[in-house]
Image (cartoon, rainbow over all chains, first blue to last red; front, side, top):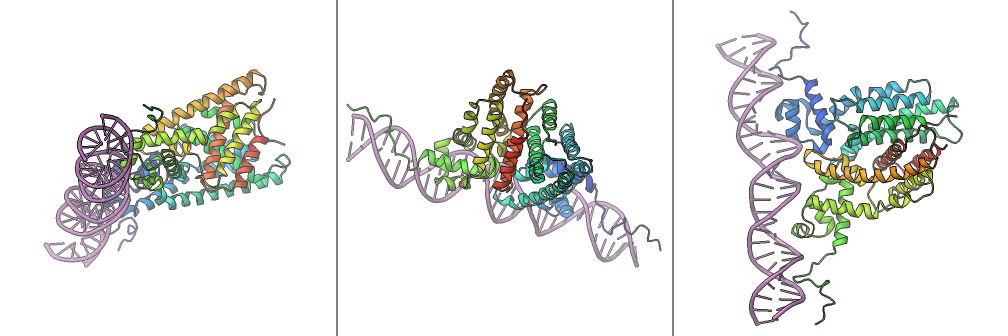
Length: 204
Length: 204
DNA sequence: GCCTATTCATACCGTTCGGTATATAGGGTA
DNA sequence: TACCCTATATACCGAACGGTATGAATAGGC
């Protein structure tokens, strides 16, 4: 009895769409419109499936959003974790800013940052969404602060400059970058923003 | 015939609510939830009037939003125009950052910036809202750039630093400030952000 | 007192929202 | 072939959406 294929051959009728492709479509819609601005009609249209298929495969709208957020962090925010490996705090900041810039200059993806959009665009009923995004952001902030703590211990910062404050400052610039990118700023303008931020970066 | 009161005594039944108070209520709702997140039910509840009264007095939801945006700029963003009168570019930046900080520390107003919220939180049908906010922001940007042009002409900037780039950089920090304020950052953290930004402000 | 003009409160309009019941189609297993 | 399990497509659900028709209430002008 051949059992080699048991994992790849489930029992019933096989689904006719690709899970990853559908999720990528959902991500695009959430990215363009935010959680509440994304309607099931637009989601199913972009994903190329019907509503029952969506609910069977992903649960509901909120669960779909979580999975899309996972995909976003995994594919689009990968530069954030790799940037932490840079040798100095300034190099980390440079990688983060240039990574964010490069992402915003992509011609195929929506503009702005999904995390920023989702943490802002919500009425009272979308409070859980806001909380989830805040949780993930806190994790990113903690990672960057840990890296800046090391830099401070290595004597990279001017006196009186706390790693916590510098982390918050850098995140603010990146959030401003995504806001401006979503508001129609040109690549040249965004590049100016990054270069200016790097030119004033504090050194000892 | 006494005509002194003709302006204050219109013909029909007098309205039973105060226009400014109602508009202030609408502003709070839009500020908390964004344009699309603000439902007519929540608006009328906070304004203390019924839907027909709202439509008679303000037109429709979009016109109400425009009037609320006017009120917001007039009352909450007044510090932005007065900040331009500061003697140096650094003093302008300091007034802007401290003004934004003070506004975010208000305990009675919602957190975050209405302009940022409105420029981000919108699906396809709210495109006109986004465009209107972008128009107003462009006007603020132009005013700050004009002021920085004067500062550059006065020799306040390091070589190679364009007023356009510095304006964009300062706006990014303020936008990041409002994002973080809306995401639950404490007053201490926001103050750290402002102080750090000022400590790295470029001088010649 | 009567007419006109405006506001108020209620109830309703058609549409869209997120989510589902139901019936059919299609593949593995026996 | 018969059976089981899952995915598909259609049609539908109650609720909430932005916006209005309608009639009663309240003021000024004559």
